[in-house]
Amino acid sequence: MEPIQQHEATGQLNALEQQVEHAVIGQKAVIREVIATLVAGGHVLVEGVPGLGKTLLVRALTKAIGGRFSRIQFTPDLMPTDISGHALFDFKSNEFHIRKGPVFCNFLLADEINRAPAKTQSALLEAMQEKQVTIEGDSFPLAPPFMVMATQNPIEQEGTYPLPQAQLDRFLVKILIDYPGSSEEQEMVSRVTRSMVADDLDISAVEQVLEPRQILDLQKIAARQHIDEAVVGYAVDLIRMTREWQGLEAGSGPRGAIALLRTARAMALLNGNSFVTPDDIKRVAPMVLRHRIRLAADLEIEGRQPDDVLQEILATVETPRT
Image (cartoon, rainbow, N blue to C red; front, side, top):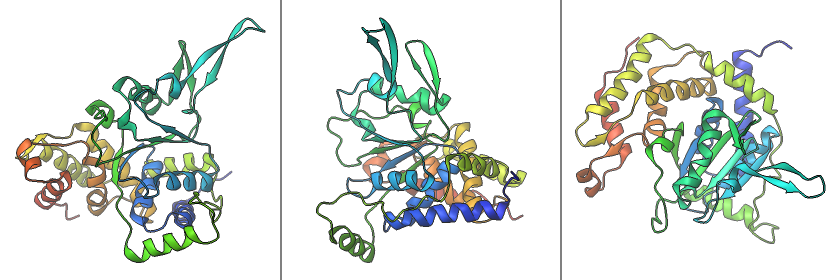
């Protein structure tokens, strides 16, 4: 089979985007950002109030690719083995058998991840970083592509466990999902209440347009997108500025620059470009860096958000002209 070309890859990704939009209304930017994360081979942390279509988005994406979907509701009593799986003793054969957990899938929705304690949250770290799971001392690889989409509620803080920085850094991007516009919300309400008994997740309009193995090919094409050294330098300058910026208690590490380039390559491919531009870097910078910086206490008291500071940094750092 001949490798697909650049324009074919962009066409496939646009077709995938359109299929997901058939189910998820009014979140075009979020859909594009999630697909870019998938093509970049990363994981995504989504912050938003309940009821904005996060589960629907992952299920629609899974159906359009023909992959396997799992959902884990994180709660304070959730155990690590509830995620990874465990060894089960079979009295008939007098042997232990491995029962794999829900993490063995292509798309894992970790709902309200900050409601589980750190020990349980860390059960995802090996899967996210190593693409494998260890059960009773044996390692089991996860079938690619594998993407974790974790959600957290920005409003309810009682009974939650903040994600440690080491785990936050494992997420390639953090996406903010907000309420849809007036017309999109009206369309959503009309569609859900039309001939439906309950507010079930309807993905019947979504058709499969890709296979899991094709996602791997698209990831390889994105990884080959050309980046000029001047653009690489621009990304590094942005990261270094986060460490020097007054009002930031902590800036991004080198992994932030790597994440910037990975995500920008995927976004360039989605846009039909064969190379990464400074505008691609600017487009993905907020989603890549907002969870990698920490505001000083005085800025938080003033009600400032990480995105506010990032926009100031983007306006300050000189953009390459060529």
